[in-house]
Each structure stands twice: as structure tokens, then as C-alpha cells.
Length: 620
Image (tube, rainbow, N blue to C red):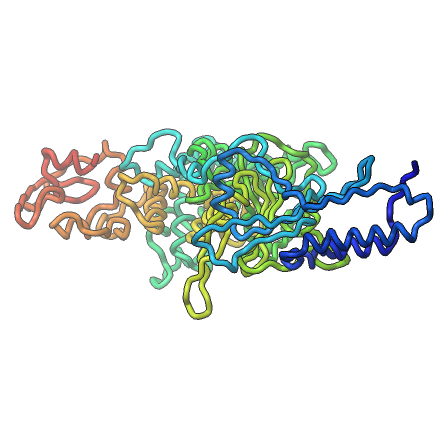
């Protein structure tokens, strides 16, 4: 018995009309659904088609057996675990699913199943439906509609359990300098001192006097003071014009010494630098030791949090360098690109890598358990429905709040329509089960809640860690213009250390919180105070750091207090001396309880009772 398939053009055309699906998948979504009488009509039309075709074919095809069912089977269903069923029933809304299957086994027969199961969820408007035709619901290569195959995923609240905290405890009354020393360690100071003196020696500078740790600390303190006293030229800080001169900077060291340190500052030995044709050549050779030390210090100072973000940061540089990149979408468009790994909520910098060019390092594993990121349409290996065909988008534009998704190897791909199209890859939140809403402001000012996959909301919430780091870092930056290409990177490392120190300081809830500006003022004075050779009266120094809300009834305590950097530094040298007259005790005297003494501190120049105020004033 011979068998022959009916593959003529008329049969193909009629079959296309029966299933009501066009060739172009972009036009097949949400528009081609069978009506109430579609099943009976399709079966009857198909019978007539086969009868007509059989009469027109040759006698060799007269033995073809075609079994056509009188009834339409129920739609094909897929079984999921009970937990998935509950989630699906509570999340899928107004979803129309169509399944078509045409098969010709040994005894040819045609089997078609058509169905439109749907369920709705309260609280979601009817215009937020997400529907796909059966053709688009089928597997697209290795992308398909499926659940996770390797176990459940954590709830999104899990990613907020571990917050930023220092690895080693820090006293609640520690000054900003203690936090800064977590990053600028003794190894960092020794590196700067050794290489700066070595470079001056290599340049045969006869007038050079070797630098030391206190001097380098004072040099950094001056840079920090200049970050909030911004003037266009270094010379103005030492100017005789009172409108420009900053005594707190000019009294630390002469401008000639400051410029000499700035000119001879170095971080690596030039005589050992590899040539370009050597395997050990490093484009960042001049700053590599300091980059390594700061990277290690950032990771050692704080524990990793449960939510971190990886993004690009930019170091502004307008000179000539092979490392310079052009990033038109960034606020800083020209400069050095830095890959940063930061805490999502605070912006603490854990690790960074200065981009030096494309490298074939391969794929690394064990970098994190769960992640999500945005992608572009032109990425390879994305589902077929998102790729362009003949220069046009493969799928039509969705309405606001609608989205489509696929899963491959436990990685989900989501296309969500907001004001613009958003494409996200994720391996933590399933797009079909976990959904939420986001508010969007309308033209009249009203708020409209639109449907949104949880992965989109969580991505938006946690993506800005590096942006937060950049924002805090750029507020009071020590960076200055320089002809040396690596100097900008050095300033970036100093700014990163200050920013991380401030973010760690903010986590100490027991401390009397200083503002960002006050933290810089205290840190600059703390670094300079150990080196300044010129004795300054306490009343002549600005007391901005201590001008906080008055907690005591003695207003004079808060306004005229001694700077904390001077008060707690070298406590052993603070000796009591006799005052020419009785004066109010700085610590215990109040308006209601007047207490006077003839003893005062020789360095702080404030009256204090011998017991117990003198000791308490210098230790608490």
C-alpha cells in the first residue's frame, strides 16, 4: 500500500487559513484567536479539503488513510509543582495560550487542539494583559517558556540582610583619621616615601631633603583642605592678599616645599619599568603598586554585603594617553575607564580595575550566585523573537507595562515596555511567577500603577551602587589638572580612600555624626596637625566641625571649643599651668552651676578643673 502526503500549494494555503496564523510572527500576537464556532468550522472545512484533494490526485494516492477526529481534544497542559501552581494562579492575568500540533505518524492523522485557558489577578487593570500566540510560545532553539530546573530562588529580602560593616570593630568615638588609616596604611605611606625620595635622587636634586611620613600626611591634608577651599591656582593659597590666602594651609609648609613634593611625587621605580616588547609590560606600571595596595585595603576594611553592583566609573583626563576612553553617555566623557564593584545601597567601593584595553582572559567562575543586567538587542544568543529580521524588529512594540520572556539554562530573558524598551537577563527572579507594580506619573500629575516583573524593579533599585560612589567622591575631590597622565589616577585613589572612610564612618550609629564637609575638615586637620611646626592659638582656628546643635546649656562650650584634632593629639604634652585669674571651667561650668578655676591647659589654652575635668577633657 503506497502512501502520499498532500503537500500541494492549495492544501498549504487552506491550512494556513484554518489555523489563522500568519507567517510574520510580528503580526501574530493577540490578534488571531479562534471564535466560539471555530473548532467545528475548521474540522468541516478540513474534511472538504481532503475530499477535494483526494479526487484530484492520481490513483496512487487513493489508498492514503486520513483519520480526522470528530471532537477536538483538550489543550495540552504541563504539570508544575504545587508551589509553582499557586504562584502561577496568583500572578498570571488575562493570558491567552494557544497550542497547535500537526503530526503524520505511520497511519496519518491530523490532531489539533485549541484552547484559551486564562485566569486573572485582582488589583491589575485589564489593559495590562500579556498575550502570546502559540507560535511564539513554542521553543526557540534553547530558549523556551519554562520554570527553574535547579531548585527555588531566594526571596528578594534576602539581598538586604547583610549590610555594610567594618571587618574589625572601630571605637564609636574614633576620629575620621582612624577610618582613613584603614585605607592609607603604613605600607602605602612607606611606598610613597621610598619612591619619592628615590625619584628625587635619580634626578640629582641637590637641594632635596628627604621626605617623611608626617610630611606626606601633611601634604595629603593640604590636598584635602584644598578640596573644599577651591581656588584656581596653588599660589593663591599662599598669597598675601587676604581675599585668597588660607592661613590654615599656608602655615603648614612653604609653597616651594609643597610644589617640590608635588613635582617629585612618585609611586614606582622608573629604572625597572619593562619595555613595550616585553611580556611583563604594564601600561599602569607607574601606579600599579598603589593600585594593588588600595584594592587590598578596600576589601580588607569592610565585609562584603549581600547586594553589590558592577559598573563603569570615569577618571577625567583631557591630555594625551593611550588609556583614555570616550564614553558619550557618561557625565565625564573623556578619561580613564574604571570597572568598580560597589555596595548597592551605600556605594562603598570594594574592588576596581582600571581599563587598559581588551584582554582575552576567558570566562571566570564563582563570581557570584545571582545576578541580573540589561542588554541590547544586538547581543548574540538572544531569543529569536527579539532579533531583527530584514532590518525590522522581529516583535511588535508592546504596550506600556507589558512584557515577554523566555528561559534558557536557568537564565531568564525579559523584554518589558516602559517609556522605552527594557531588556534584562537574570538568574534569580522568574519573570512569570514574581511580578509587582511600579508607579508612573501622568501628564496631569496623577500616579498610574503599571505591571512590572520583579527583576526589573530589583535591578533599578540595586544598579546605582557605582553612581552613589561617584556622587559622594566628586563632592569634595582632591583632583587637579596635571600634565602627568598618572597623577589623575593618584587623585582618584586618594578620593576613593576618603569616600570609603566616610561611608564606613556613617555606619557607626553611636558616633556623633559629622556631615560630609565636616568629615573632610576633620580629616584634613587630623593629617596636618601632626606636622604643623607653627604654633597656632586655638581661638584663631576655625571651629566649623564643632558648630553642631548645642546639647549643653553652656553655649560658649559649643562655639569656642578647641578643635578636636588639637585636643586629643599628643595628650602627654598637655600640661596644667596657672592662669592669672579665675575663669570658668570649660567642661563642668554652666549658667546654673558656675565653677571657676585658676588652672588651664598649656596647649589648649582653656581653663579646667584639675580633678576630674583636666583628664576627662583630653580623653573623652
